[in-house]
Image 1 (cartoon, rainbow, N blue to C red):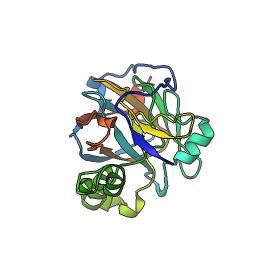
Image 2: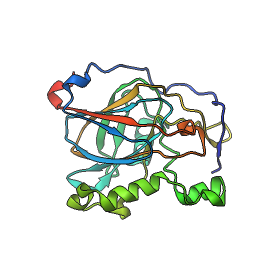
Image 3: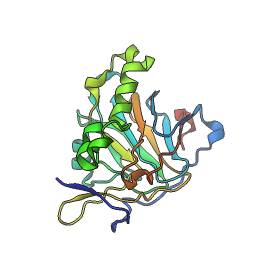
Image 4: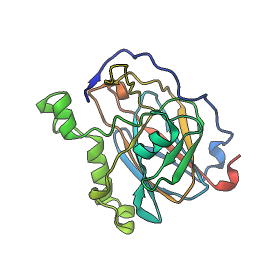
Length: 236
């Protein structure tokens, strides 16, 4: 399957209606900034709500989910796409695991479409898609490997680089055109837009705040994101 980059948006439609969350940052139990191009890893307990905020807009957020009580079970794009009948995620989308169980549900979304197909950038894909001299550039796969080899949580629970699998690209715009080609197109997110999920099981969340500089997924300018968590009792 050929993947190209374009600088003007291809035609698309939102996957679902937009919905703002009733939750306020003042009641969040955790609020962190993940710097531009950096990884993040944390726990989200069953029933808690987790929000990813695109602070400056047009930022892709590559995300992996694991069942915190059974690390062999993790997010599966194949089950998610097959069970939802949609290629893109939006309000109400359920994220399915490799065991066909619901891991999380998107409960609020002010962006409208999130990619399930584009995968994570890597030194190898940068070389193939762009140029040999791009190989040393920072990538999402590098971020995942860094987190899984240096973060205390990864060592504590026993995740390592062999556990890197398929990811969601929150806020990323990858249209599939009628001829089957995928395009990395200009983003449809904006400053302050967010996606919010409710954990349906205890989760480990691993994020690469994408450092990609070669296609429009980050507007060629990676920017920070904010990560917020609320207890289950605060979920409306």
